[in-house]
Amino acid sequence: MSNETILYLQRAENELVAAQIFLEVSSNPVLQKEQFKLEKEFTFYNVVISHSYYCIFYSAKAMLINNGIKTNAPEVHKKTIIAFDDSLVKTGKLDVELLRIYQKMIVRAEELLEIFSKEKGKRGAFTYQKLPQANRDPAQESCNNASFFFKNINKIIRR
Image 1: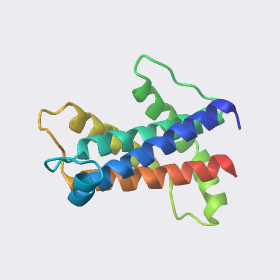
Image 2 (image 1 turned 60 degrees about the vertical axis):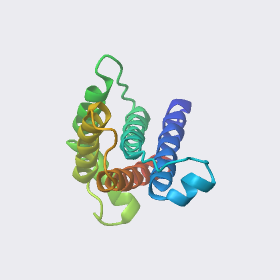
Image 3 (image 1 turned 90 degrees about the horizontal axis):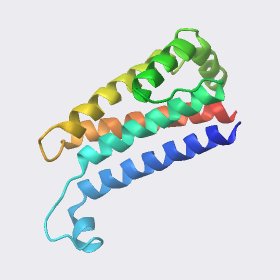
């Protein structure tokens, strides 16, 4: 595994942990008041969605780099999802890797691609909207998706 792959996996994990922390802080007014000394209640659900997306994005970048594929600016996000689909999902390579991990097809590559696509759209919608915060349900879903995606990609790369 290359140093670049390792760095992207570490960055993905950092994004996942950040999403989990912001989700917990947003959901826990006592923590906000006692630990962070906040005078009023805040939510950071839009931040959770953004960090969750970046966890998925960096996981996908790590998987691509591990397979000798690099994506660069401009439009690096669009290029990454296209390369992930074309080079790993459509070729069946990701399904084979997942099959080796689970001994049967519990998680399919299409599921991972669907998560990546969905979170990319959600990140854009909640990052650039004028509303101050997203709500808890999409944030929780994003955090769960990021965790699922990262754990599966990480297992494939590190085996």
